[in-house]
Image (cartoon, rainbow over all chains, first blue to last red; front, side, top):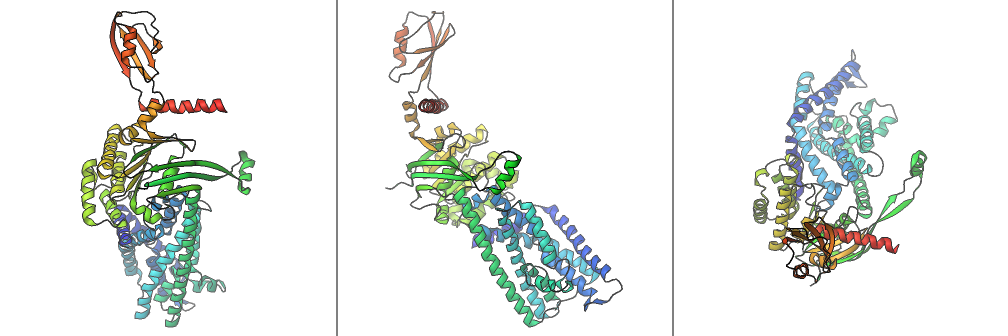
Amino acid sequence: MSAYVAFARSGFLTSFAYRNEVWANIFGKLVQVFARVAIWLAVYAGVTAVDGISISDMITYALLGGVVMGATRYDRIVRHVGNALKTGDVAVWLLKPVHYPLYLLAIEAGASAYTFLLAVVPTIIIVALLYGMQPPASAFHGLMFVGFCALSFLIHFLCAAIFGVLAFWLMTVFSLEWLLQSLISLLSGLLIPFWFFPEPFGTMASHQPLAWLVYYPSAVWLGRLDTIQTLLYFGFGLAWLGLLAALLALLWHRASSRITVQGG
Amino acid sequence: MTALIEARGVSKRFRQHKRFPGLLGAFKTLVTAEYTEVAAVSDVSFDIQAGEAVGYLGPNGAGKSTMIKMMTGILVPSAGSLTVLGRTPHEQRMANARQIGVVFGQRSQLWWDLPVIDSFALHQRIYDIPQARYAENLERFSALLDLTPFLDRAVRQLSLGQRMRAEIVMSLLHDPKILFLDEPTIGLDVVAKDAVRRFLAEINRERGVTIILTTHDLQDIETICPRLIMVDHSKLIFDGELGRLRAALGSSRRLTLEFATDPGPLPLATATLTSDEGLIKHYLLEREDVSLVHVLSEVGSTRDLKDVALHEPNIEEVIRTFYQGRNIAATATS
């Protein structure tokens, strides 16, 4: 166990090696969050509320999207797994008494913690000071938001790692990265919350795993889900988490045993 | 005592998706599922005892790396049985991993962005090395391979020679019983090669770490490995001491005789004349039982002999003769 704690720590410390990236990161995140806020300001021009959602709700939603999606980098994970398998570098990991997917999770947790503290938090503070941000709907919702954030990170990691392993059979790492990118921008709720989706797409979108990346954490913060619903959807999220973990384990086993049987 | 590594008729075949040439062929490749089988290792058997140092030698594509990968548990043999430390490596990969060290010359195991010392610290956690033992090994190995000046530098800033030395030290920190090295000196300069060789020889001698290394560089084998396993076209072709290989090949020694005045053509019964430059004549001593004394007594004391030089064949020549001899034999029989 101590090895994985050490990996997380090294993921965190490795990020320090690229100091300029911190500034580039903050700047990039600022632009992204500003863009989303600007879109909603334009959409809401002259209107106080659409479907009972105020502009202040939407600015908060845009900010929360930056909080949950700002730190974890699916592209980094897809590339890491995909390249390790395609180039055969994964052999190095098969030589060590370590589970590679858990190693990756630990490294990513460390790197995400770093980006969160040094890029996400400053960005959110700057934008929140400029445009204002609503507090969580209640103490319960605030607390559950933290739980949903953890769920968001884990589901995010699993989806990206699954796509990375698929690169072993399907196509280039790059094209899978693009595919996942478009799926995430549409189906996580990052660009448009599902309550603006026409039915039945709204219902469909809110039951697939990517919805737990942005939509549910933000909806919980804003109090769009009552207590029962919040707990229910947290449970659904856990179920997706278990399912995706099992899928990753299966695919990983297939890919690594194909390497060991057929050669890398 | 049973052998540390036992290979019995080990084979490894790879299936390769058959590709068809040309544009139409490219489409054909997409829809067909034809495979060609390539044998990387065929029916190889050997025993390696604790404390041995074995050089695994062969030309490119002879199946050296494949054999190392099978012994470390990351490839599964297609046929035959292989045990390492009493285990089947691929079935007990984790347990096997804790007792072996592996160095790939072409693939780094260090963390690219971290200082060397941090990579070592992670290695300590992965293998649960007790702190005292870790500190002791680190100090000793760092001193032997002169790692101290760059322990704090990030791996991506190291030269190849420095990186390789760090790789080797890391692979030994958890006191492995066996150390596998796949071309450890590839791309190194003469000084770095020498340092690595002397270090490996010392580790083998003092700590009794069993060493198995593949290489193209015959000097590696001469310095580190008393025993040599040679493979070619996936098959084992020689297993034994280097000296035995020399003897088995008749080891043609070369003799150079230099005269003060040209004695004219000088054919000898004991040696074959290969080239005649007048004052300097080159001979080949093909028979083992012929000594320099025999040759000199045949030349006689009347001639104006100025200097004599006898060249023992070096390992490169021995092995070149060996492979060439095999190829000739192969063409003759086919």
